Image (cartoon, rainbow, N blue to C red; front, side, top):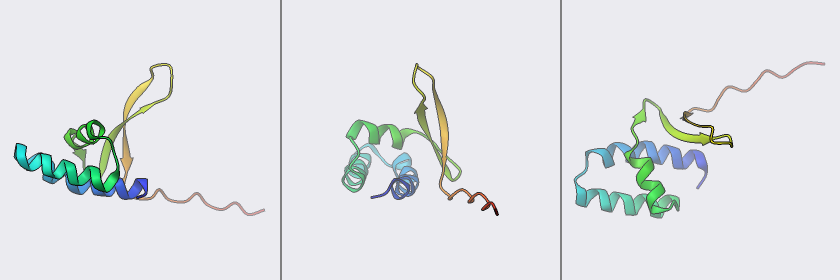
Amino acid sequence: MSFRAKRELLLQVNVRYQAASHQQKSIILDEFIAATGYARKYAIRLLTRPAVGCEILVWHCRGQGKCRLCPIPMRPSPRPPVRQL
């Protein structure tokens, strides 16, 4: 499963997970792990984090302890224009 497909699935499952009871969350989590192959703790972190519109916030670390929450857009970014020679 591609990264983008995993993010799309995360957006769909996140809403269900947030509204589910404790028993239902366990079932949803097991299904999500089976589909994505993520580790259980990582999947829990993703599913408990709020979704922002059409984006999910994830941690990006650039080394030396410089970490920040960044949105991952679900739409492909526009291609830069082709330069004519």
